[in-house]
Length: 102
Image (cartoon, rainbow, N blue to C red; front, side, top):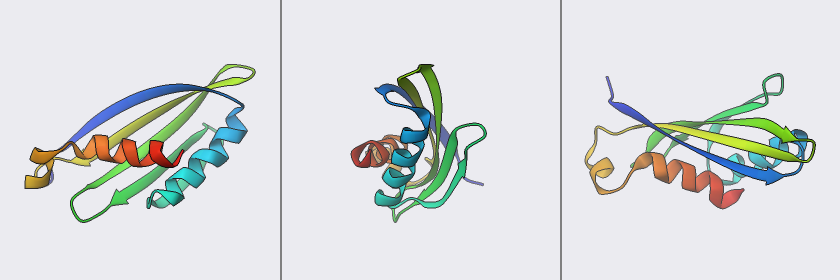
């Protein structure tokens, strides 16, 4: 069984939840994430990120702050029981890959 750890970040952006659901889903696709699952009822998107040195997943949850602003909560969980995890955080890589394409 793999040893896993999590990292979490929040970002507040202007726009609506519907806009950012579409943008987030596109960012995950562009970032190389797989098994992208969208749950519009709870404004949440989950996806896997499995590359040579990084195996994990991300859950993106959108919360309306005001009528025209949204808080994006990004939670990454990744395997940290390999030599590559000692060199750099796999969770930071997953979060960065999402944010780069957002």
